[in-house]
Length: 148
Image 1 (cartoon, helix red, strand yellow):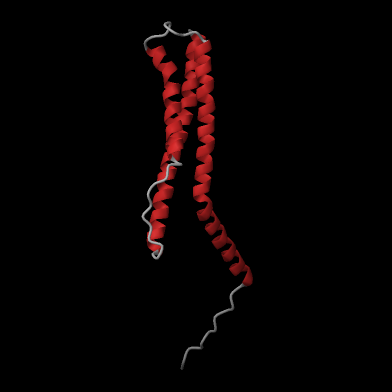
Image 2 (cartoon, rainbow, N blue to C red):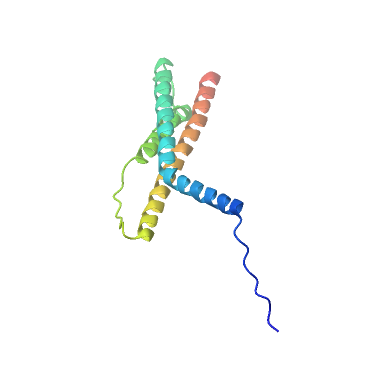
């Protein structure tokens, strides 16, 4: 006796359409990932620059020269340092790197792409983290100013 031969079922058009949708979405995400990182870095640089300018004006008009020393001085300087780190890391996202790329190798292209995205994302995380810490430090400076 031989086992009956089963014919494979024809592919379901709905399943194939769903798979095609997710493949296209994945391709779009990959194509736009560097642009998204760059746009986020632009926003962080803009916010950090505005905060830096506002904070400098607040310190200037606060007439704190010669009146602050010790740990309050550190509290007042921390936002400036953190905002500068945020600006620097945000700007480094845009600095081009020399990419050695072999266009005939898909694996080499993939590795270069992954390296570029990882580098930009690392700098973006540093810029974002410094920005968040700077905002916390700004609130700390305001608290020290209002308290003292």
